[in-house]
Image 1 (spheres, helix red, strand yellow):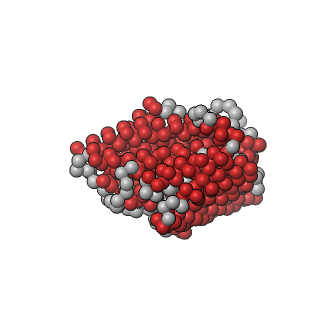
Image 2 (cartoon, rainbow, N blue to C red):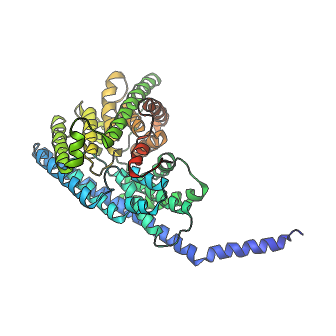
Image 3 (cartoon, one colour):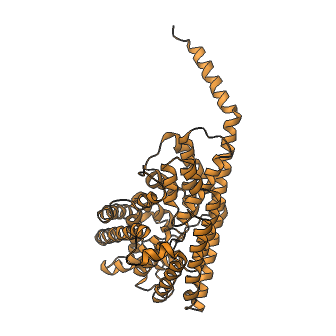
Length: 440
């Protein structure tokens, strides 16, 4: 016999009351919220420290242009030693490690890549890398740090399903991006497009909540702050179409080439360089530091650090060497090949702005700031092959809604051309080196 409707309603009410009053469920909620708050606080503190170190470095280089020939080799050699000796798993961006941990649920692997020790080493070594002039960013490391914090919190309370644990790691990484860029929407889009390539109903609420909490922390501590200021650049139809085609094509091809260089340099170097990196990592790191210092001297000191200051200068029309984009690209390849911790997000945005500055010469009548913004989104989309993430990050960091359609078109064009040069997304390819088996 069918169950009476009243009985069904009573049972549903009891189940809902049990869920609402469940002690274990509330324990998990508190643990999750505390973890999200911690991710936001650590990301903001990391951002402030990186900014202050960048300022100090540029003051040093301005006062003594030859200083990086001492600080870069000494610092990068030291980082290579500390990373090999104490913080294995902290090298590189941090996003490939997080993708590997998401795709392969072996607890031993996750504990190795997402330990709090590795997260602490990631912060310390990335800041040291910025202090010695490496062309690296803090955003990729913040993803691994956020994922590590949330994974540690998952062991404080019982999260019974593997899907929930993956959701926590994904949420930690997304919250890290949201707080790092002070751009909450970018964190959600990045989690969907790049880190998971899917967004299940069970994990969507976890990710959204973590991003909101981390975003609130960032806004509360940093204010409603756009890293590149608020621009209002616009273009006419003809000049805009030409700029989109030039930047989308050039940025996509160069971004794809850069990705191929990163993938190749992570596994193989020509001649005796690979043997030197494998057998004498400290000496190899120091040698990369010397090359970096040479690139810095040629660029008048502009290629050091994250590139935020130089990008903002280009958007504001201030004088930056025409060679900045190309030299910043090379400096980022050298920094990454050395094996030190550090991301490629902010350096890629800086390279894109520099290349946009060059492309503006090919688009008569187009404002420099507008073409530079198109260069940023094109090159970044070409590197990470995540066009929506590139679009949202640039929109949120410049607050230039008037450029929305050209930016989106440019990102999609760049993505298509990038895949011709580098068929596999860079983070997915790099993730393979951190775990066995195919990346899902």
